[in-house]
Image (cartoon, rainbow, N blue to C red; front, top):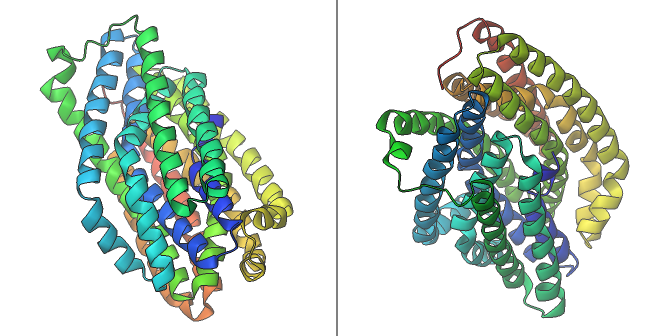
Amino acid sequence: MLANITTPLLGVVATTVIGRLGDAAILGGVAMASLVFDCIFWLFGFLRSGTVALTAQAFGARDHGEQRAALARAMMMAAVSGVALIALRGPLTSFVFDLMGGSAEVSAAARHYFLLRSWAAPFALGNYVMLGWFIGLARPMRGLAVQITVNVINMALTIILVLGAGWGASGAAIAAVIAEICGLVLGLAMAWRMLEGRFEWGSTAHYNREKLWRMLLINRDIMLRTAALVSVFLFFSAQGARAGDVTLAANAVLQNVVFLGTFFLEGLANAAQQLCGATVGARDRAAFAHAVRLIMGWGVVFGICAAVFFYVAGPAIIAMMSASADVRHIANEFLLMAALVPLIGVPAFIMDGVYVGATWTRDMRNLMAVALAIYLVAWWGMQSLGNNGLWLALLTFYVFRGSLQVLRYRTLVKRPFEKY
């Protein structure tokens, strides 16, 4: 869980430090670019989730060769994907920020920050793989060490370059790039030591056509599911941008609060991926069912605690993240709905972990598409409510996303486990 709570801090730190400058346009631009950047990385979240599932299943089956192979295949895909993102960053930036709208000042700040931070792509995706591999092997503390390294370096450099050197948005972007590079170097060094120098990435067994194809299918389903999820947040941000710079900035601040809260649940989802994957690999159905019940129970506890904490501490967090009185006023107005997300989202987050660990990724993809359609219909029906309707539609999305997965789980759990 702690390995996950550090991940959103790159965007939070950039938003917070830039927020101290008191410029709503720059704050909105950096927040928008951070959201887009995070959403693009979430599209490649299969590099973490898929690696957790396949590594955990090999771990449960005690297949050490396949554990190494899972790392090799995923790192190869991360390298190719990261280089492709750098190559496409120009047209991608133009398309995304033209689509999202916003004022000229916000758009300019967003484009500048995004173009610089995009150089982190191969390293950030490699860190996704390392985190997934460590979690799959039930070594989350190693993944935590990587994430802490990334975020401590990012925090320090962001403060130094933005507030100390006066580099503004450029300083925040450069800090993120350097931090991701340092994290990947540390992760690979720890993996090298765990494997006693035996990566064996040149082994032909690592690139077995059947297993490569299975990995690609699983990753495809996870990516499409994530694309639907990313669409929700991009749509949310775009609608906020159309309401003006202040509303955009307020929603961005609240979304960072939401992401901090839900990353507690993402930590439990990671636990579900590892435990469910390992029990599938071991062919232990009773242990699988027990793991699901246990993690869902803890999810409810954490969801309640997160909702209460962020509602009570929300005003202080908002004040810390923005120096603009107008932004703080709007953010506090919608704080309750933002604080409810970690609680309402419990079934969705936990079931995501269960589905990935069991490699029921096709069903997860299809159910997410249905939830996305319900979200858009809900927004259309409540758009006259303005920003209230936007937040209510988001809560509706989480309710249906989790409910649909729980209903489908009752059928899937009765089927034989797929051979890893």
